[in-house]
Amino acid sequence: MLAKRTSPEHRTIVQVGRRQVGGDRLTLIAGPCSVETEPQIMACAEAAAAAGVDLLRGGAYKPRTSPYAFQGLGREGLLLLAKAGKATGLPIVTEVMEPQLVDEVAEWADVLQIGARNMANFALLKAVGRLAKPILLKRGMMSTIDEWLNAAEYILAEGNDQVILCERGIRTFETHTRNTLDLSAVPAVKRLTHLPILVDPSHATGVRDYVAPMSAAAVAAGADGVVIEAHPDPENALSDGAQSLDLPGLRAWAWRMRNVERALKGAPTEAAV
Ligand code: PEP
Ligand code: MN
Image (cartoon, rainbow, N blue to C red):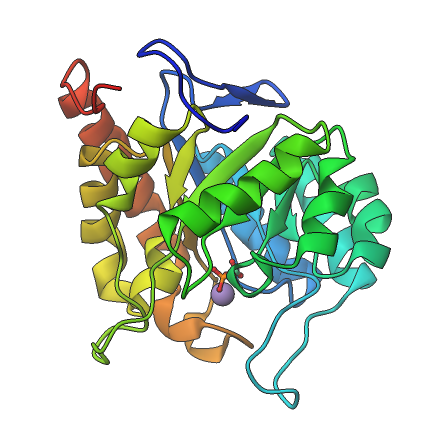
C-alpha cells in the first residue's frame, strides 16, 4: 500500500503554491459552498485573505441532492473563482465530478476536490491520479476509513502522490446534525497513513454555530487543517447557507484557529506507528 505509513517520521507534505499542507503550520481553507456571482466570490476571497486563510474554496460544478437545486455556475464559476484567487494571491480548491472535466478544472484549480459522493468513483480517481496536482479527497459519507484509504490508493497508484484527505462527517442515526463528525478518524488516519488530513466541520454538522467549536476540536485532535464554508449573505446563499459563516464570522473563526494552533504547539497529538 503506497498510502501506508511506515515510520513515525514518515509524512507527506503537499506543496500548494507557497503554502504547505501537512507541514508544521495549520492549513485554513474557507470560501462559499458555491460560486454565485463575481462580487460574492470576491468578497469571500478578500475576507479570507485578510483573515490569514491559506486557500480559497468554492464550488463551480456542484453535486446536489436534488436535480432541481442550483447546480453551480460550471465553467463560469471556475473562471470567477480563479479570478478571485489571483486577485488575492490565494490558491484555489474546487470540485471535479466527472473524468471528462478533469483537464478543464485542472487548468484553473490549484487543488482538485473529489467530493464525498464521488469518493468511490474509480474512473474519476484514476483520472485525477494521472495529474501532477494536489487532490483533496473527501471521505464518503458511508465509507469506512479503510475504503477511504483505498480510494486514496487509486490516486497514488496512478502516480499522483499529492493526496490530502478530508474528514467531512459520516451518516449515523443522529438527525440533529447533518452528519456526525468522526474526529477519531484523525488519529486513526495519522496512524495508518503518511498523507495529510483536514477536517470539514461545515458539512459534518450542517449548523453554523457548531463550526468553530468542532474546528477547534479537529485541531486539538491533530488535523493538519480545517475547511469551512463562508458567505457574505448566508441567509440568501444558493447552497448550504445554514452551515455557512458570514464574513465577520470567518474572521473570528480564523483568529480562533490560530490561537488554538499556538496553544497546542508542541502538544503530542500523533499516534505512534
Ligand atoms: C463541498 O465541499 O462543497 C461538498 C459538496 O462537500 P461533500 O462532498 O463533503 O458533501
Ligand atoms: Mn456545501
